[in-house]
Every structure is written in structure tokens, then in C-alpha cells.
Image (cartoon, rainbow, N blue to C red; front, side, top):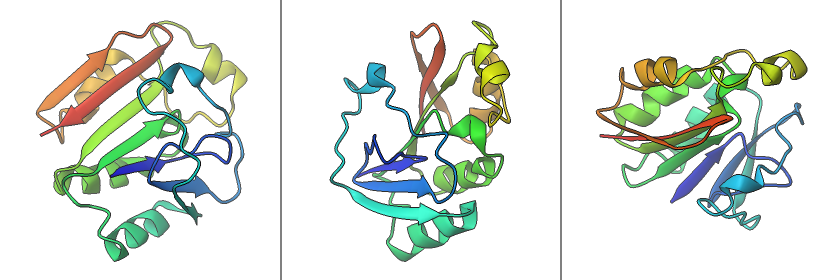
Length: 151
């Protein structure tokens, strides 16, 4: 099952989609990832206010099944509590896919989008993920970092 964390009303890629209740800044398409994770828009939607809403719902619906894949497509850089969620995802043996702006390539995202709390380079994202995962694979992507991590 695909679980999309930080999905948007316009781009729900998961069987289950978590959409932030108040902020519409994530509400963009990012068509370049449709070939990997097509827009479904027919999955279940949950709205969340904080990361504990996500964790509690995932526990309730057995969302931390080790066969699940979690997507963070241009959402991971917006919320520092996602580090807590990442730890829970990894602890249960779930795969994670993160797409985030590549700070080595450009800093325009951070200048233009005041909702970005973090900037990542390939090395800093690898360092973070290596705290939880043994298999970390970066896909070639210039302006964005696209990484798949699993154990």
C-alpha cells in the first residue's frame, strides 16, 4: 500500500493520503513524478493538524505494515515533526520515498517559499536516512533530490 504524507487536494498519489488541514502550500502537482507515482485521487484521505494525528491514525489502521511505502513528495522540508514520523516508519520496516529540493543545485525554493524549514543536499539527506535505513538509493534528478530508502 502507498501512503502519501503531505498529499494535496490536486495530487493524491496514495491508497491513503494525509493532507495538512490548514496549509495549502503543498498543493502543487510535481508532474515529473507522475511516471513513478501516478496521481490516483481515489485513495482514502485523512486531514491532520500535527504528526501525532498521522501516527495515531496509522496505528489505528495498521498503516505501519512493513509492506507499505511512504511518500514524501515535496512535503518533508516543511515540517520538523516528520523526523519523528520517519523514525516510526523505519522502526516498522516500511520503505520511504522522499523528494525534496536539492540545496546544492539551487536555493531559490528556500528564498521563494517561506514554508521551507529545511534544506537538504544529497549528503545531508543520506546522513539523516542512514540513521534509520541500510539501503539508500538516490535517483538522478538535478533540481530535486529523489531517494528511496529501505532495510
